[in-house]
Image 1 (tube, helix red, strand yellow):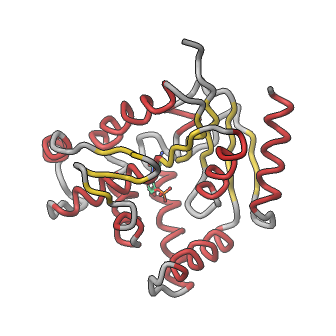
Image 2: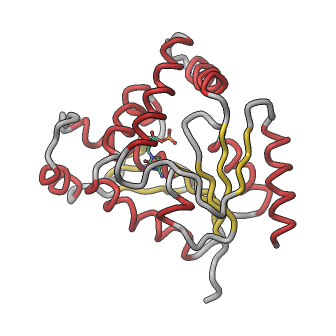
Length: 220
Ligand code: DC
């Protein structure tokens, strides 16, 4: 079987990765994998067991043995239950960042993520796609934006979903997640050396995608 092409998109919370990744995948005819959704699904599952930040590695490993998670037709499931909406709350956003620093969680999701692009060309989006999970990827991008702008986008996203949040809370959430996702020991958020850096602070979605397509054409 010919090797499938993988495009990685990494970057901090609120840099616009999900929207851009989905549209880029559509325009190229690739499938799309949102790995943050998998971390969120794990967090929701663990929270339902009442797990908190100080959980031991043994408990995490034991609980994860009972979890079957993944995508089906663009929806996220945990043990057969569609949790696509339930994982989008600020609380699960917080815990996904907390639990994603833990080795049993990262090891559990590593194999699941690696299995996705086996059959199809895929755009994968997350924090460590280009550095850890798919270091051999065909093309790598790192999307960034100022903290203020990312907080503004996160705020609008939550308000659109009817979730009550202030701009200050959105900014605090972005700052805390930046700190946790970048400073953790395992697979911290980093730009891969061979990734193209794009600052989207003053760029719209269309413009960002156009820029990425230019790089892809230049590369392909
Ligand atoms: O992209 P997101 O906000 O849905 O991701 C939720 C959390 O999951 C994020 O704060 C860090 C973690 N995550 C990760 O550690 N590695 C990934 N590849 C994707 C997400």
